[in-house]
Length: 344
Ligand SMILES: [Zn+2]
Image (cartoon, rainbow, N blue to C red; front, side, top):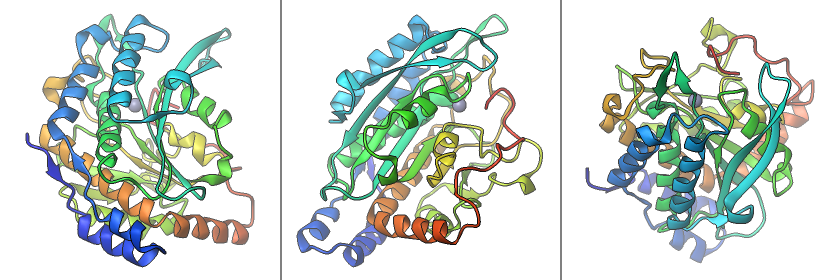
C-alpha cells in the first residue's frame, strides 16, 4: 500500500488558524503528516512474528520486541525520555506474590511551543506468550496499536505538533496494566500538564470495520472532538463502551492502559475494537489482520492526534471547568466491575 496524506488537513489547519496566536505557528501547522502505511504493516508483521514468541513480559521475546521498537523510535526521531528510552520498573503481577521487573519504552516529540499541556499516546507491546501450549503472537492485541503509534510518531516528524507529545510502548499490560501504572507513577513531568491520554489497543480486526472510541462518557467535552476527528476518516467510528449501560464486558474503562490515567483524573480516549474470535487465541496472527481497516484506523487516530494537539489548551480548560464543578475529585471513582475477560 502506498503512503497517503491524512485527510483531516483542511479541518485541522482551520482549527490551528483559529487557535494559534502566532502566524509562524499557524504556517508550520499547515504541513501534512505523511503516514507510511506500508511501514506500519511491516511493523505489525514484525512485532507479531514467531520469533517474538508472543512477547510475554519478562521473556526473551519481549526483549526482542523492545530491541525492534528502540530502533523504530530512533528512526522516528523520538527524543529518549529515559536513558535509551528504557523505563524499568518493579511490579507485582495480578495474583502473584513476588515482584518482577518490567520495561516500558518512552520517547517524545518536542512541540513548537514550549511548556503548556502535553499529549500522551500509549500502546502496550507485551502479550500472553503461550496460550494453551501454543504461541499467541498477538497481532491485533497489540502489535497493531504499537505499530500505529510508531507510524504516528514518524508522521509527526514532517508536521511538528504544537505541544509536546509523549509516546509510550508499555509492558505488563496483560498482567494488570502494570506498565501504565508505573509510567504514571514515574512520569517525567508533573501529571497536571498531561491534558489527554490516547490509548491504542487492538486496531486491526472487526467484521463490520467498526472502531470504537471510549472515554467521552467520563469526559463529555471530548465527544464532539472525537466525532470531528472521526468524521473525516474512512473508518466507521463509534463512541461508547465506557459506561455501565454497555452491559457485561461492555464498560472498558478499566480494560486497558488508559485506566492508569483515568485514576488520576486525566482525560483519555481509548481506540480499540470489540472482542472477536481471535482475541487471546493462537489465531491472532498477521494473516488474519484486516490490512485496509488497520491502515484506515491509523489515519483516524492521526486525525485525532492533530485535532487534540490543535485544541489542547481548550481541552485542558474544559477539564479545569469540569473539575471545578465536580461534586467529588475526579479520579477517585470506584473501579469498574465489568472488564474485558483476562484483562484488568
Ligand atoms: Zn491488549
